[in-house]
Image (cartoon, rainbow, N blue to C red; front, side, top):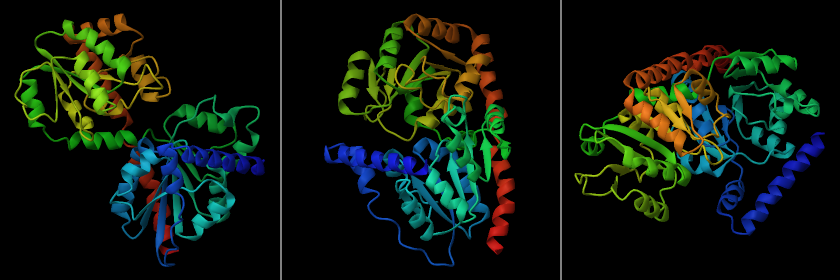
Length: 411
């Protein structure tokens, strides 16, 4: 079975190379970034390896990474990514001593990778199951921990054909699970090495919220008005918002942060929202009803100004991150594709978040959040309570790691 798995990995890698030859930019980045493995490191250097699929998983591992670096500065941090969208954004992350693409999951690559660093502990984040690397770590007695793992019955581990894959999970030292359901699923296949501690990304977004700076240009735009923020919006979301805009009360305004800030999309937004201006425009005092955020990196802090938030993506593949607005106590509205996210499911049940399927749904929930103070306050309180129940995963993990890494430092 391992032979078939490795063959599939090699076939996938070849497929990416073909896509690269055909001009796919992301495939080219994936291939070029993996051409050279890191040089071997001095024997006296001890490394802790964190691996993330992409940017979202990196943010989940980041609080643990930062705390380990703070408490154990003698260890160097090796950070690897599978996806160009994670690597290209975080390749200069200053906390990591080395940032790399992870070579494809073959036994040869796994052996080469582990020979180049003296690794004392490894953290895979959420869904990163690379079985040849996992075996190589196990063979070298290097502990492997999973951060914020979240499993469901439909995962292949729990199917009739998943026997070989289930056996690979025995190479894991400890699973830090987001919820009790994941721990129960792992126990059902004989794995009881699980600690339920929640999602470490809540620790990250909570820290961002505490450090949020003011944005004078945004405050000038608000002029004391209440604000709806639409974060990471796509065209289907923007059409719904544009249709609702004539109903917006005079004491309300909209901040729109589209997922795509390319010139063509911004021109389309301008056509749908004539009474708008770009955040980057110099005439910051011009009166308008819609502010379009045409820069990246500030949305997570802008949520401090929102009364409630619309999160985009729910009419496409999936909604974007809702943890950031929830951290500020903002009720959240999104489209129907949200059930892959535990926090979204939980908050819909508790009425801190609201899923819509069409224009009528959006009109109804916006009208209620705007017009019913008690309803909006209750939804906000649900979000605050949910956040408070989720923070602290990093602290639980660090309590265990303090023992493991203290031993490793003296071994």
